[in-house]
Amino acid sequence: MRSTVRRLWPLALCLAALPACSATRGTPFTWSDLEKFELGVTRRGEVSTQIGDPTTVGFAIKNQYQYVVYRYEYTEADRDGVRNRLLRAGFGPDDKLAFYQFQSNFDVDETDFDISKVTRFTPGTSHRDQVLAEMGEPSGRDVAFVGPQKYEVWIYGIARLEKIDAPVLKKATFYFDLEGTLAWYESQGEGFLLP
Image (cartoon, rainbow, N blue to C red; front, side):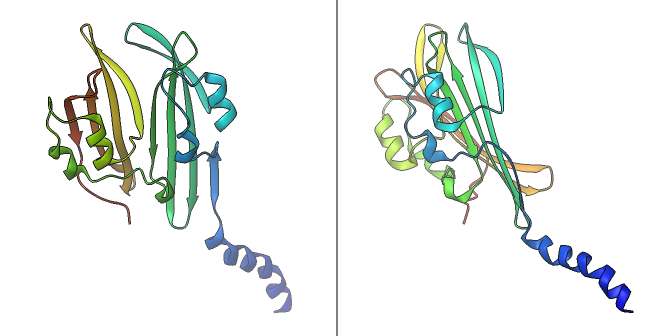
């Protein structure tokens, strides 16, 4: 009996520690790390200095230019679930930040938003400052061209895993002309808010 207890003791310790186990993968970064980044100003080296080496480096053709795209990923998993952060940052030929998109389901990043507010804005009359006041900082910024017209694009988005392999996506995209007037917007998803 004693020998059985001695052999099972290490197993009991492992099982007792199991609920406290957690795993992480990728480069740890948060939404606050991105607050200093500015489109057309921040250089690729500054992003690497602030966040670290990207998980992957790729290329994208967009607006008739080739961009270097840094992709950062960070995942934490524990008994309460899986939380992810993803950042895609694109750098133009001048090595400056041309676009980025950040997604996170970490509560601390506070990237969730109330999608019902999207319909409060009127294309042609609402201004960028109104969207900022109602929606907060966007989790992504980009530039888009429609014909010769250039638009500043603000992206609000969050994905939340409700069931295994069934993410729920909520996204709102606002397009502003060069004067900051809302040209149009797109939205999808439903209004879940993180607690």
